[in-house]
Image 1 (cartoon, rainbow, N blue to C red):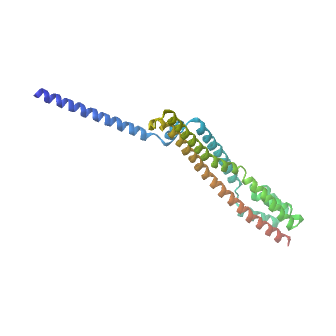
Image 2: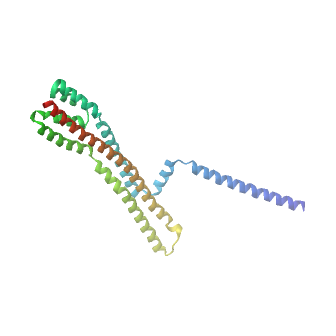
Image 3: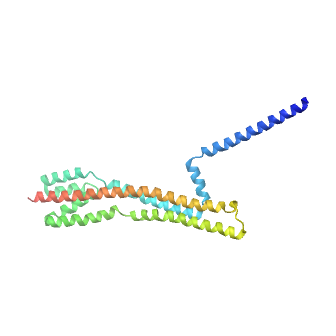
Length: 244
C-alpha cells in the first residue's frame, strides 16, 4: 500500500513538474515574442508578403520619401524673414536708390528676394512694368516651389492601389486552390489570404506616411506663396512712395 502511494505521489510530482516546465516554456516564448521590436515584426511581415508587390510598394515609399525630403529642404531654404528684407529694401531705397535696393536683394536668398529684384529691375520703366514683372516672376517661383510635388501625390495614390491589387491576386489564388482540391480547408488557403492582406496593409502604411509629408509640404508652400504676395504688394507701395 505504501509502495502504491509512493508511486502515485511520484507520478503526481512528475506531472506537476512537467506542467510547470511547459508553462514556463510558454511564458518564455511569449516573452520572446513580446520582446521583438516593432521594426523586427514589420520586417517579418514584409518578408511574408512576398517580393512581387511588396517590392513595388517599398519602391513607392523610397521614391516618395526622397521627393518629400528634397522638397522640405528646398522649402526651408526658400523661407526668409520677409519683414526684415522689406525693411532693408525700404532703407536702401531711401538712402541709395534702386541700385542699393537691388544689391540687398542680390545678397539675399529666397523667392521673395528674387521677386523684389525683378520688380526693382523694371522700376525705371514705370510702376506698371514693375508690377507685371513681379506677377510674372511670382508665377515662376510658384512653379519652382511646387516642383515634383505631383510625383509625391502619385505615389500616395498608387501605393494602396498596388496593395489592393496584391490582395485581389492572393484571393484569386486561394479560390483556385479550393477549386483544384474541391475541399474548403482553412489551412489550405490561410497562407494566400495572409499574403493578400499584408500587401494591403503595407500599401496603406506607405500612403499614410507619404500623406503626412505631403500635407506638410503643401502647408509650407501656401505659407511661402502668401508671404510672396504680401511682399509683392509692399514692394509696389514702396516703389510708388519712392517715385513721389
